[in-house]
Image (cartoon, rainbow, N blue to C red; front, side, top):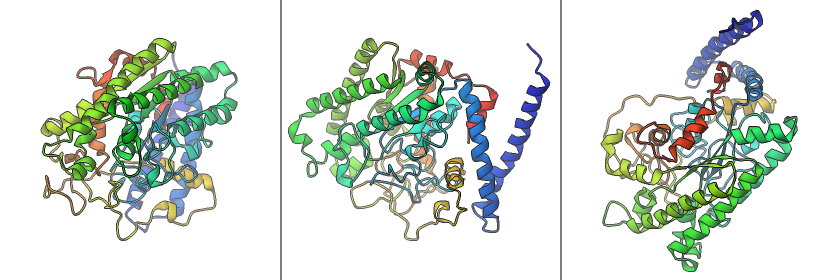
Length: 455
């Protein structure tokens, strides 16, 4: 093994010292979140320093070809503050992000989302929102949009969203206008994109916010379940080809979960059994055709690697055998929900003031850096009583780790962590084919300096 040069030792010592100092700043930021006596200006300066230093370290990692994560889909994987690309359906208020410091409310769960958990596991930066893609082009981007689907009309009864087609168009703009100018050649850009991972969670809204809403959409009158699944998988297959043409090669795509077991469907349909099996049958038809489509694409798109995350049976197993996974309540959502049909948590009567609403210095980069740097630092919920388990909630549940469902449509961070763990597990793996995923992960051997990507 070669001996580090004096310059390398100096660099390592500097990074080590900086890490120790920044860790103490993180600790201070946690204290300041609950004590008004801390200096907000001091925190702003720390965040400003972190923003620029994070960018420098990210550039170093880019030169070493560390893959990034690009995300497409619906509210399951949607997070982060957006203005220009905001969807009409949004969280952005407590109790969303209850386990996150500062502005973690801009997500549809209590803590980290699936992309953030995977990013930390792979030691890459959690993708930024599309609004922030231009700040650090070497970091991945999250294009997901709440209520969005494969079909353009899906979810539009709630207002605006960015369907799968629009998300891919946004990615095309990123490749041409943001990533392209940063690489010395098209070969380098192609290598970067082919080594990145593309995560897709799409299709749930096409059922919940389209096919199963006959008052707002006519799709259930136009197509039977089989034809609708064929329509969805055909269009999705075309979008996957578009991603391939733009440079994507490693694609991680999630099945639609057992929607007939979700509180949103149960509370509306009120089936005699635990789940609305007719809804699950519809979804299973889509998942089967999705699997066939991915096998077809793997054969026709040279160099492509598709991995299916088989969440349908896993979530159903979590519901049927909750104690095997550490859960106690599988019927009711953790938060009381609105009565407007969205299935989202009720907003608090007194609006909580977030850092985005506080007076800030006039540097927009400080504000954006603050958002990203403090997006979801863990806050332990602690130990609470278990009163209310197995009953509809009139207030927020105490111990979120005992619940599978956060609101009527989304899972808790605890459930998402199980899904990710099962996907990357050596045995009892829910991702297919597992050897392809192993090859993906094998590509992601990062140097110590890239550990700075983690928040």
